[in-house]
Image (cartoon, rainbow, N blue to C red):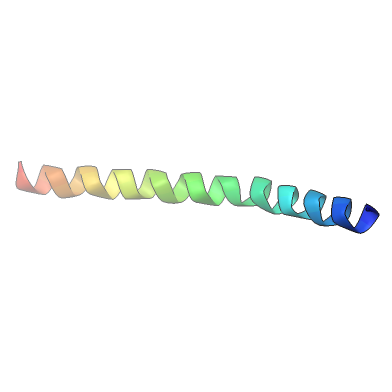
Length: 41
């Protein structure tokens, strides 16, 4: 049971650590898409 809890906590920590990277990637994708649209319009 403690092993399961330890795995769960590790997964949660990994998810929390990956959130900033994911949000940065989404922001970069949106920004590049806006620049792409500005080139055409």
